[in-house]
Image (tube, rainbow, N blue to C red; front, side):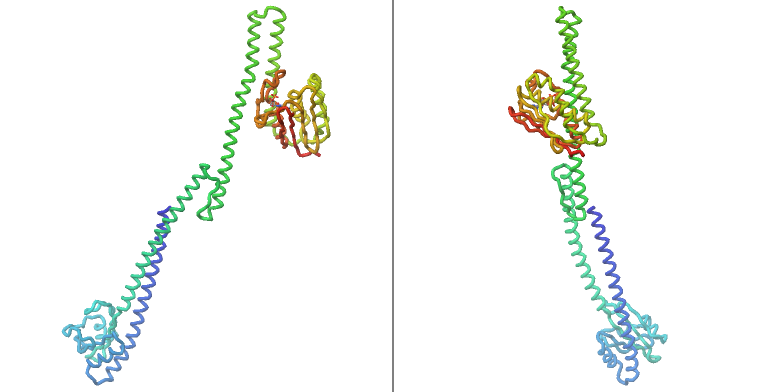
Length: 448
Ligand code: ADP
């Protein structure tokens, strides 16, 4: 990336440089053209001046040259020898016959040439014309001004190049710094060290926001998967444990019977009764597991509204024998209807009211109250210590088995209730304090 940027930068600079050189070249050619035009005009004027003059050639050469310094004026013989020259340092013995401009003048044309001067190392523009069969006039004009301008341009370009090089180094170093900082930020975002990245280049902000959003979602999904795996592993371990205890007991009693260790008919009857009870218990656990599976996974449409009070009264009737045994009074108050199937409603209320009776106190009360899409199941029993409240909806979670010696629950009742309630778009919460009773509050969108 850094190298690519540098390459792009230098290509840009090279193109600029070529354009600058082209501009200088064009300016130089224009300048030469300009000089040539004025030299040509001067040559014509000087020719007329010479032809009109009677003075000696050296004086004339000096006079003409004085009109436009640093112009040089030379009078030559047709043979190429110099007769007079406004510059005093010329070589008198030199023959100029072969100089391009003189050769052309000898043929009667106006000779022109641009070349390095023989005497001083400058570029000179020459122009010559034959004035008479024996006399040739030559004007020459050094274009060292152009050379000077070229030197100035060259120095300026070199300086510009240096400045551009320094700017480029600085800009690329800064860009590289910003880029690595941005990469580091993205790495930290992916590692979960930060939640948001501020883009170094504002155009990238939406993209970085999208990445941050996705990373956050993936992180949550991952946590959810880990949690689900954990729940499932615990579930399998708990379910196996729940089934193993009664199975061990069944096996023990069956062995007693087969080995003839239960002698009397009463002992044998007790063994068989216990085996039956343990089988019932296993069936109950399996039934609850199936029920939980159904509640969690079935995906049918929201059912029609169902009136809660009739179902609550049915539940109360079913639990009457257990409640009566401990003089617990059960009350149904109010009415509402919710979009939950009747069978599911029965399951919810039965589990909650059954718990309320089981964990209720003798001579106590259990209330099922209904109002505006809310169903509240209340008791004034033993309550639940605060540290357990966050766990009671987990599968197989029991607060303390010693609290319920008569009938050991499966620990699945509340998880079934929660699964059904949430599947139907409702919410369940609990309020309780040890010795002060327990209240389960269900809220649904009220059905019409
Ligand atoms: P279980 O089949 O063991 O009753 P639940 O899932 O129905 O399982 O309940 C989980 C635990 O929550 C129970 O073991 C019990 O200790 C506690 N619990 C539930 N309802 C009540 C209640 N009304 N009063 C006191 N404790 C309760």
